[in-house]
Length: 254
Ligand SMILES: Cc1cc2nc3c(=O)[nH]c(=O)nc-3n(C[C@H](O)[C@H](O)[C@H](O)COP(=O)(O)OP(=O)(O)OC[C@H]3O[C@@H](n4cnc5c(N)ncnc54)[C@H](O)[C@@H]3O)c2cc1C
Image 1: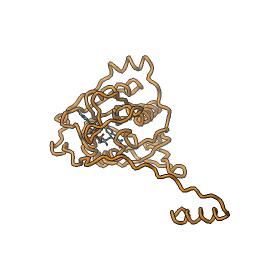
Image 2: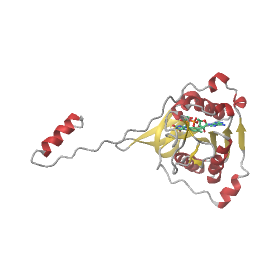
Image 3: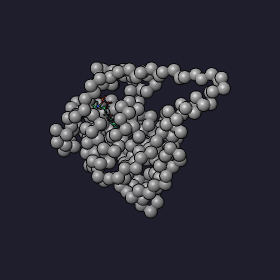
C-alpha cells in the first residue's frame, strides 16, 4: 500500500504568532511539524504496519521545512518529498493544493492522508482541493481506520458519535486530532531518518503551468477578534425560569 501523508512545518504554536505585513512571519522563528499532522503520520504508519506498504511524507515550504520532513521520517515514515521554491512564498491554499497534487501524482498512491486544517492558516480547504485535483473522493474527520477487502473502512467523527464509512481506494482522508497517540521518534529513528531518501523539488520539476502557481487570493486586512461580551446575569426573583426560557426561544435554541 502506498500511503502519502501531507505535512506542514508551522511556527511553534506554543509561541505567540507574529505577523510580517499581512502574512504570518515564518523566517527566523522556531518551527515544528504541525502537531495536527503528527496524527496523520501515525495513522499512515499504523496502516502500513498492519497491511504492508510505505509511507511517503509530502510537504511544500521553505528549505527549513526539511526539519518537519525529518521529524516524520524519524517517527518511521519511509521517504519524503519537499517542494521548495522562491516563487511559492505567499502561496494561497489553491496554489498549495496544486503543488501538492503535482508532487503526489509523480508516483502511484493508494491513500492520501491530511490533517483537518493547519495550525497556522486554519483554512481547512487544502485537503478538499487536493482530492479534487487528484480526482479522487475525500472522506473527512477520520477516527478509527482499517483496510478491509482493498477498501478503507473508517469511523467518521460526527457531532453525535461516528458514521462507519467504507471508501474504495484511492481516497484522500483527513484525520482529526486525537485519532491516535503519535509515537515519539526513537534515538534509532532519529539517526536513521538522516539517511532516508527525500526528493527536493522546485516548481520546474512539477510540470505546472507558471500561471497556476500565482496566488489568486490576497489577505486584505487583519484585525483583532472582538472581545467577548460579558454574559447576562439573571437574579432569581421568581421570574428567572421564564426569562431563561425566553432567552432560549429568542436565540432559537428551543
Ligand atoms: C504540505 C501542506 C499541507 C497543508 N495542509 C493543510 C491542511 O490539511 N489544511 C489546511 O487548512 N491547510 C493546509 N495547509 C495550509 C495552506 O497551505 C495555507 O492555508 C495556505 O498556504 C496559506 O498559507 P498562509 O496563510 O500560512 O500564508 P503564508 O504564510 O504566506 O504561507 C504560504 C505558504 O507558502 C509556503 N512557503 C513559504 N516559503 C516557501 C518556499 N520558499 N517554498 C515553498 N513554499 C513556501 C508556506 O509554508 C505556506 O504553506 C497545508 C500547507 C502545506 C504546505
